[in-house]
Image 1 (cartoon, rainbow, N blue to C red):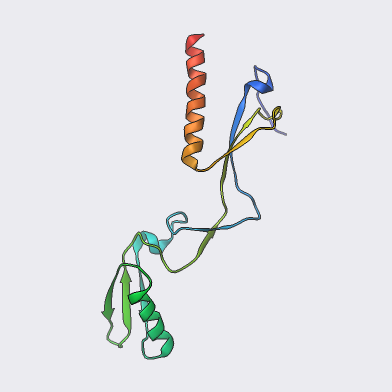
Image 2 (cartoon, one colour):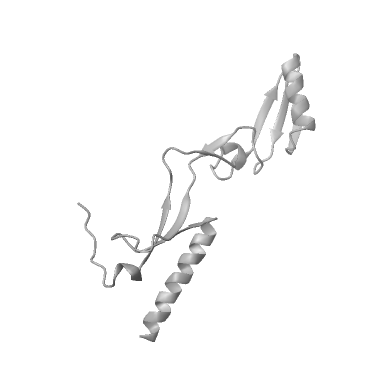
Length: 142
């Protein structure tokens, strides 16, 4: 059973801000969004260039990958690419999207059916901040 405080005003006097994550949807995400260890700390790729696959991988890293790295060679003849932190790794990350929304009404319902989905979390925070400031201004005016 949910225990809710009974609102003072009518449902039309309220707005609800919420963040939802659809359970059955994933999207490709940047390394920074998922706190990827490679992005946070950097990483090493050890490549054996004695076969065609290794040569192709090394060529991709050197000429096509667009990442910052230092190339070294270990005692076994393997090529070690050392990549700096804070750049995209080679993995594809997936995460669940977050939907930042504002709707009219409260837990009793949405009388207008209006829902505004914000393009970014920052927009949602700004909208809520402005709304709270308006409430504060009205309280100060009496």
